[in-house]
Image 1 (cartoon, rainbow, N blue to C red):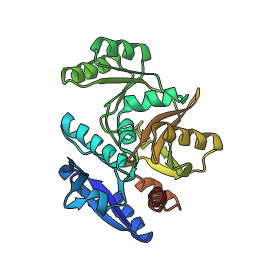
Image 2 (cartoon, helix red, strand yellow; image 1 turned 180 degrees about the horizontal axis):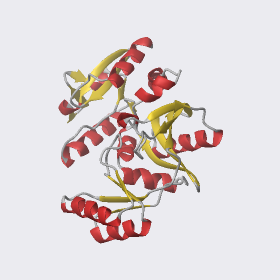
Image 3 (cartoon, rainbow, N blue to C red; image 1 turned 90 degrees about the vertical axis):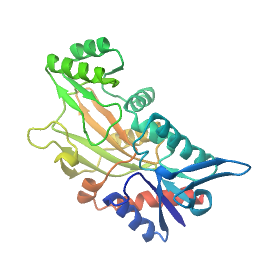
Length: 294
């Protein structure tokens, strides 16, 4: 059994080492797929290659954790390539289009909302006027990049003038404007790690001193918790709504009840693993093996 891991620039990181360990633990072999050399050939027989690999013959499943960086053409091709590979019978985890949906915060929010899951009030627009009116209406706002990770580039402010300047700058640079109402909450949020139909581990993430974001990568503190059944069901519903095999679901505790603010299709679990007794990588790989055997 050979499981391919897609990488962009480097395959040397903790996540990949954990996945490789889990693959070997389950009797498999890891192969690495450089995304910048993927090639699809629509000949008499469809073929998919990358870095000397024939992906139909040389791998039994693919772990997709990145589309990398690139032009609109490059990203569109990469999404379609792995979707095409799935159509030809190779399991891709997470599925290409579900992965794309999760990377796009707009697509994530409307998918969750349509599934009946509570999300913060948000305005996404290319109109500077509409964004400014939203900032004035919300008062306390969070301005986010449409596509991002680890909380980078996310700004919170109660100051309308500052919000105006940030939005005007982003508009001048051609960015989509994403304005979200800031939701009052404790100085923590919840990360639930979902694999298949199960929350395998979860934690509170506490904000570091003087900070409002809770990301472990910026100094947030992790505390393992056992979620109440209602929150477990919410996390699983959110992951399923997006169409993911595994996900990091971020939940905040608001006065209106729990809200899902993000569903991550390529979650890190370094912080969670430090406080959890569950072998998270092993759970992911066992799920992949089940898909191979179907």
